[in-house]
Image (cartoon, rainbow, N blue to C red; front, side, top):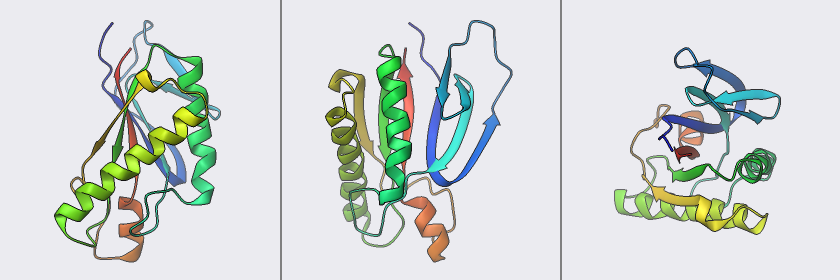
Length: 152
């Protein structure tokens, strides 16, 4: 087994693939919607959360369902679900909330058939924002989960 260094970053507003580096022919390829995902690629789509909520917005579940399909089709993948928040609230509160978001998503994936041993979670709070926390739009983008393949 080799460690994979890619993240499937789920953000719901876009469907953009950004190659990180060229691929070797040995790379496994995974399909997310009609997009090829390999071990050196980032897919951006939002799984969005409302402020202070641990469950994703309703429109984010179709993306989670795609992740379920990938996990079931590729049981060799070990995935860490990383939770993040915006900067509203204390750092301690946001760290707890981000972990609860990741745990909620993990429980959802398990309830849909993904083996529990395939998943782990981690909360990162408001660290590593992907957008400006001084605007409503930026804060919405920062309330997210990321899926990191940690082994194969």
